[in-house]
Length: 453
Image (cartoon, rainbow, N blue to C red; front, side, top):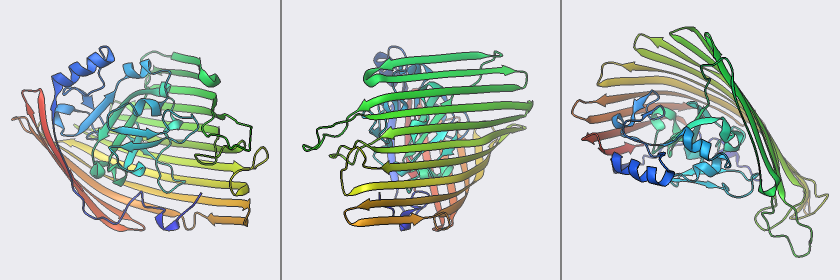
């Protein structure tokens, strides 16, 4: 495993060369919905022009009033996909490819949206960005989220750098978790068994009483896995690469008044897995462990017709790779171990102001600060080797200011304008912008274009 210190923050910001991506398209609502209903037995994963989405503008808005491209994975489709995991479901969507989605469960799942690099697709959970601060790419591991805890997924395609930052050059995948029901207590449970001795279990509880609501879920997955690598001719022993995951999720909602909603949350995931030495070398005792957790709070304040959102998320991850060569010895090393730890603080405060029925404004500030601690040691044919980079050198922070305008004219013309300025500890200040006009014809056909930097 190699590490390049000069590239540690390439994902978060970069020295800006102006590239313009121009996308023009036509959406015919009735045709899309009819085709999708035929494919999905009545349900639709395409977005009708009257559907309300949250991700496109950071506030609820009909897709007919935005020029952005949004795909919805509904709760009905999620229920029909109970035998799959999140990566398998996402890779079935147009424009998304996930490396390793249908291979061994323990293989990392890298998300490629519209062919862009892994670090250019932002993953958010309930609108809050999540990252992996332990590596260079910083892309979130979607294996940490069981499908059974998800209510809905919104996939926002195309550059969204003004509202969401440089991580969203290719787009945003917003995963919306299940919310509390009106009852005092409600629950659901799932138990499945399949090929390769795969067991999946999940139990969830939620409810509401007065001004407090809650939701909690526990999930467990265990599989013997498959043998991904063809074994070497001189080693008759083969193994299956097993995988085990335990996840905990808890959320609370508190309404002190009809104008304030406070939502603290906590998520934890513990993963253990077996892996091989690359594509052509079977390895019997190469394992990894990963523990990660996120905690934070989402606050909503209604100020007249305006809404102020204040978000905070802390993300911590600890990954350990070990090859002790007790059962087999492959490659150059007789022993190796790599440790990758990271922690990140993220805060975002933004306000949505509906000036009138035609003009809406959004403005905010966000801040990210992360540190990483990485080490690698090995003993092999060329002697011992060790490298270490600690948090005193692997740290960065970024402060951003952004604003957006959404104009919905009575003539069915819509215009979205956005601008953001990032101040990064390593790369200084950089500005980006977005221009997104659209026009709705007879409430059925939408013409739009997107120009962004």
